[in-house]
Figure 1 (cartoon, rainbow, N blue to C red):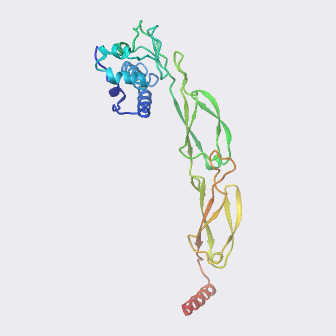
Figure 2 (figure 1 turned 135 degrees about the vertical axis):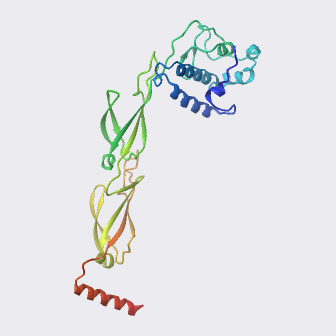
Figure 3 (figure 1 turned 90 degrees about the vertical axis):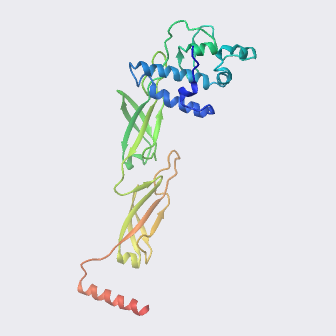
Length: 297
């Protein structure tokens, strides 16, 4: 029998830490999962190899033995005599994977960790994860609400949290496809897609809006009616307000995700509309104003 390079199977270096091993296994196991590759014998073979590699490298004791004696597997008994005790029962000849899968392992694995295959064993496979998109408007995420989704022919009632953001993904445990031969169900991943709003621009929990005021209000001061997420409010406009002036309305932004009672802010940026189609009298007054300003300067 040939030596099996489990590091090569998981596409990781020998210096990989536990986190890197786990990440590599999950990525490749999802790629070659039987549910995603039906009737693909090569993918099934690769999937079993990945489980075996993870069983060895994902277990500190198994990895220690493999790193020390892997290529000299025929002499691995020396390691056993030094006090190594395998974690899995070896009386049945069927290995139970720490990753949640069970089934056949290679002769190389059996030679390293004991047990003999007693015929083809049925593997337990986790169900496939599902992905769904939920399209919403800004007004839909101002408060938490219940909504029923139909995914893979099943109705699933979820809570849409207030303040959820565009592109945010939440996981609904166990609502993927059913596992096979006793394996666990997959999970459901929901991506929230929130359409741009014609009035408000969102950045996290803060909201931005442009408001146009006339020249006279800008110069002399006055009031402006501002749209907010929960209705219109009147704001005082300071005299001599310049174009691009930004004013903050505290607590008038979006609800903060999963922090009940907390809100972002609303930022108002003023644009100034200049008068057009001036009458002769208006032109005369603007001329007088211009002359006054010229003399002052």
